[in-house]
Image 1 (cartoon, rainbow, N blue to C red):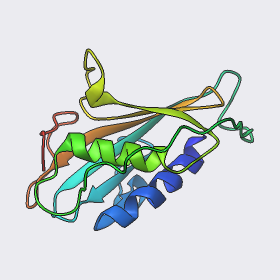
Image 2 (image 1 turned 90 degrees about the horizontal axis):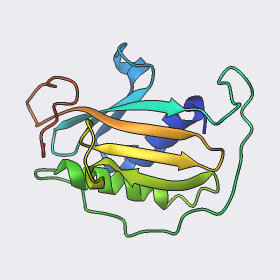
Image 3 (image 1 turned 30 degrees about the vertical axis):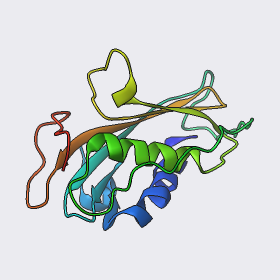
Image 4 (image 1 turned 90 degrees about the vertical axis):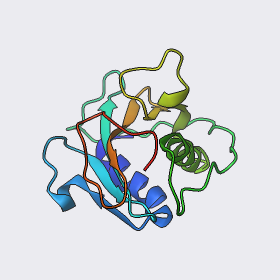
Length: 160
């Protein structure tokens, strides 16, 4: 899925789960091309940065050729992210489930960063693989508790 379609698609999945969900363009965030700034129902915030690896032979300035296949099996909806302190691994699990449960025939699988062994440099996020051979990375860039402010990139607390 090309980034131009991914950002609104992901926003549509996350927005019903949170107080506010704005694109980088809407909030004037210019350090990355694509992402969402989210206000959780508890007042905390999460900045999701999107990055993409195109399928072999694809170019984002060309018309996208959608490739489809068998969608992944549905999963449990994941932990609630409504109210109280929200653990980042619960948030990650919830958005992974939202993606997997779309039934999208473009989708191959979703890998959660927090469950990788060994864990990578980015603690929380998703790697989404598509039947086209492309991958989309959903990185938790920053997160902060209610009344707090974003910290340094990728210096993310375990809960907000």
